Image (cartoon, rainbow, N blue to C red):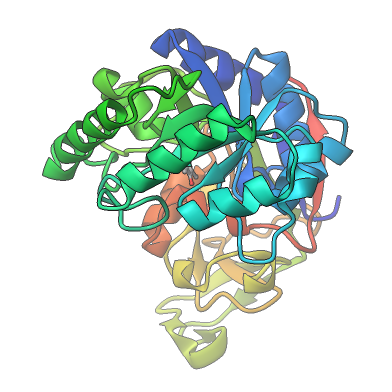
Length: 364
Ligand SMILES: *Cc1c(COP(=O)(O)O)cnc(C)c1O
């Protein structure tokens, strides 16, 4: 066994179905950043099989790669950068997103009938038309519809704090979105959408025609402490063989900087994954792994290629399986546990893990 990332596509399908049934509206599975580290092409295929009407990605490049893999359904991308090839995206039957009149002009200049969605910034202050520019963007969109340049297939926006259901930005953004829709009278988008995973689950009023589900599709909790138990199943398990186990004396310092020193004799094990593989260095001395049915804590700093765990006197054989995180059903930590240990969110844990470990797909 070498270090590997095991992705259960049956869990992805289960999560996609569960989420779709919950909302009762169309569903977009978001597979940007290589499917949050799970594999963009495989996750998109599983999501389509489970009935997801739309797939969402950030970049044109991701969308084109999905098309090259054989994906044929509705596909939205939303992060074009200057110099991107609008024509290639339109030719590949991708719904593109425009934020500005200049972008709409560039789309018209391709001379190809496009499917365009308009993104309005309702308060995230990231991408999207400002509310000030919205009337001009809408006017340009109407003109392009009239002259056959495009069909406006969607109008959408994105929340800043949907993982905090009580945050006042949520009401303000939903209100701003409804107002933007009123101002877009005359456009008849197929889909109006605002909600990501947390909002789709926690804020029914924000579901409109479609929910963009990212993290929840992978079985991870978009709003820890807030989300009801929906029976979502984390799809990713990361495992590695134990390289070796050995005894160390009281007073021995472990790993760079000796940030941990044994106060009694103990045994430690070596795991062949490090920050070069996306194991967060901030998890040093904090995250746990599962070895022979027991959770063992990391000791000392995570290195580039390896880290050390405390085996508390036991000496498992080299090659013994070490589970870093997984669904949590066999006593192993979850990506959420790792996120808490590293002071981050589960999104970052699963998205960054990768590189040297191979990815393997199962269907259980
Ligand atoms: C990443 C992303 C999503 C998915 O968010 P989750 O919190 O993972 O569900 C939805 N919409 C946009 C615009 C995004 O960038």
